[in-house]
Amino acid sequence: MAHSFVAYLDESGDDGISKFRSRGNEGCSQWLTISCLLARMTNDLDLVQWRDEISSSIPHRTKRDIHFREFNHEQKLNACQLLAQKPVRLFSVLSNKTTIPSHSRKDLFKEKNTLYWYLCRHLIERISWACRDLRSRVSQGDGRVRIIFSRRGGLTYLDFQNYLTLIKHRHESGEEENNIHWPVIDIKSVIARDHSTMAGLQLADVTASAFNSAVDPNFYGLCEGRYARLLKPKVYNRNGRYIGYGIKHLPSLDKMNLNQEQREFFESYS
Image (cartoon, rainbow, N blue to C red; front, side, top):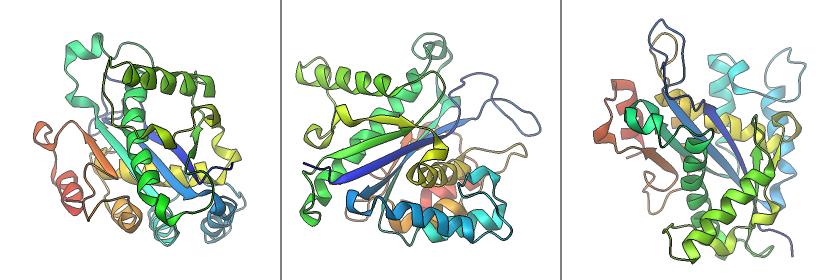
């Protein structure tokens, strides 16, 4: 039986944990954000039209595919406004990498992609909750979600499948606990595709980049929260609670030295 939902995942920032970018200095991003755009499978083909709507709204643009970082400020605002009108659910897990203790950087996160997997786990939890919650309104399909990652260097879809299989086995054997609603997760259908080949991944890129812009200072030390605030109507929430559901931040806010722009962003979702 066909899936009921499709989830497109992409990230913004990098997973480097040393030599962070600071005002006037290049370096690793201070934050890593992994985001998801969740849609009904019956709307999957519509994602192409929604992507084209954003692309065609930019004068003199010749490329059909979109990448948020190539847009100027006004074009980014426009992209978020258009996406916020679509029948989707959005999710973001935001990690402040500067708060990772130095000993953990050397040990816990020394293996490549460890931090990425950890954030994906939190994201998949929230995707599974939304699919469970929305099932009563989505009669088509078998209730499961097809997960599609944007391909990143050094990883394949088998890596994603194996990681999910591992944490599911650990949960079922009692080795560790997680809150993933496993009946909706179809591990065998997980795939990775190039950003340019799927409109859903390009819209997920809009989401990830918008939220990362709200928290990750740029070369000039500035954050821009307007993009992410425009997307709020489509962010997954439960009874008006966004933090902990559609928005997950790591670590807790009281353990971060947030600047004013970052505080205002999180307050807008409180």
